[in-house]
Image (cartoon, rainbow, N blue to C red; front, side, top):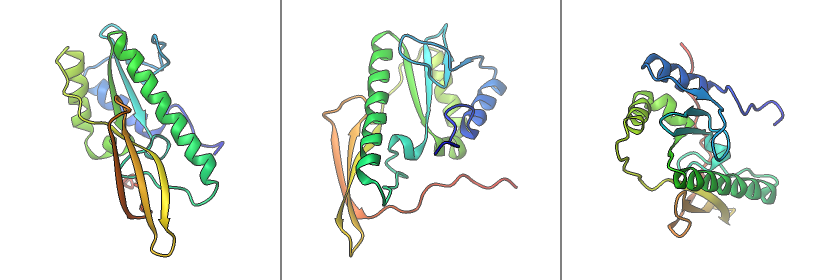
Length: 177
């Protein structure tokens, strides 16, 4: 765990390179009224957070660890609550906030750049439900069934539950050729 970096990760570098190539100039980890987002456009008040699928509860790729379940469950809840608080407080201060999953950077980098352009242009962004896994419980060990509890990032009252086979296929970034 000590070797996992919080800054200058490969997804961050890829997104920053694409934004720079698109002519979008930004600051990295610049201070805002609430925290230091990964990419900041201070003048236009746009903040981009790049979220790891495991650390922030990606609904597609979050994998429940088999050991120390209480520790990891608490860690996930703390991360999601921090994401929610930062988003709410920045948006209340007039900022536009984009959350990008690490897998999106590899799957749809141009789409993310397009979303950033829209936010910078001041266009009203349609905010889709931004689901976060907040808890996973084992239902049946023999059949490998789990229940995933998810909440919307911006509205804690919007919840969803899914039951199914345990998610074990972590998302892996494509190999470099």
